[in-house]
Length: 141
Image (cartoon, rainbow, N blue to C red; front, side, top):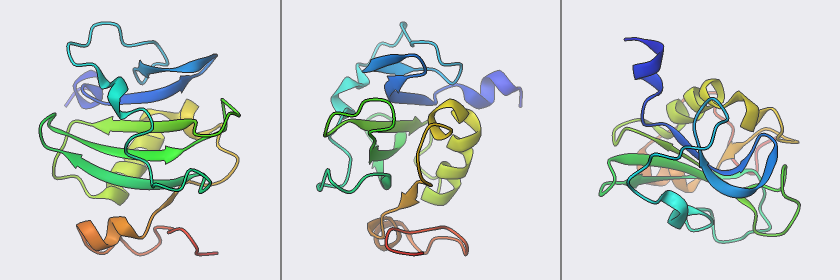
């Protein structure tokens, strides 16, 4: 599969590489301007309810959109409370840990600015099965 096809359908919703404000972004760091579905609704709506728990990802399957989402409270680009990040993948079968690892490679500019490693909220394991050995969860050293 070509690199372009492999990256099709992956989006980031949040602050861009050089811009504060939440938009839909491509892996290249360019705003995605040709989308027919407005993904701005997921800005702040898929994260764990406690917005004081930064850099703890939740995982959701969005069947109506044919996508899965990793979402977390993120003040790495915008210091205001309730700033968030969401990554959307074109899969309803991908495991949360696999999505996180692939997202790190597709959106390195997002993960390189995080002041700490992103961890999975334990609710992801309860909902989607055991996380692979070595996947960090909230509350683990």
